[in-house]
Image (cartoon, rainbow, N blue to C red):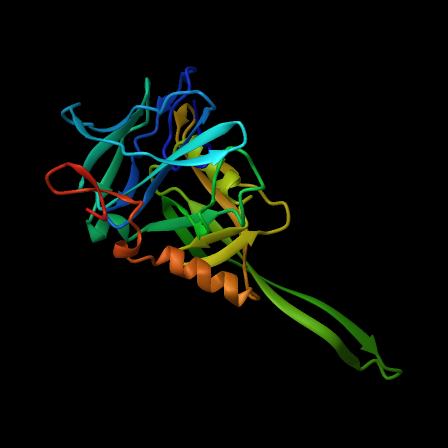
Length: 281
């Protein structure tokens, strides 16, 4: 069993840092879609997944998996939506995620950014699936932070011709704007936030609060230490907003991002009575 590294939940490894742990809890909105993917080699058993109430440590609901066949393996996936506010963790077989919070509090969500990401197809990597039965699927990763006005950088790609009188003639010019995305509030974020940000920017389609961005050149997240000995950091990432898009692809992506619930029978919902049901029920 292997949990896809693009899954927006963190399943900690065995090694533990000797620093003070970050006090930041991962946050999701009740409107977010938490997609989890787990690959199992051919002949392996379906993973046992459940949602656990992090306060009472009781099981809230079992995960109902959908399947997608790949070469030599099966990808089990589930998209959780409509979770009621609370503190949770996800358990898959004998591995448990860090605690995450689901909320509908606008004040808590105000200073967060929802990052949605997927690959163009399923050929880029063998540990993630982005298109299932012709339908694109996005991962949702919500983080504290956003774009500061002081992080804007203006640029131009141009070529000019100088006349004999040294007047400049613009032969061509294309403007662009780079923006610095800052991730982490006063408390910072755990280091794995930066790792996932760097990884998800390898995807073909990445949207920050509905606006499409790409990594500027080969820039990677820059780590800023808040306090020595504290495993909590602020990351900055230089991005460039996409100006020219493929209209057909963009329309498909927007349809997937703004998908209405009654068209998604394969999604799962945790209802008010803490049961998981498919939307078609």
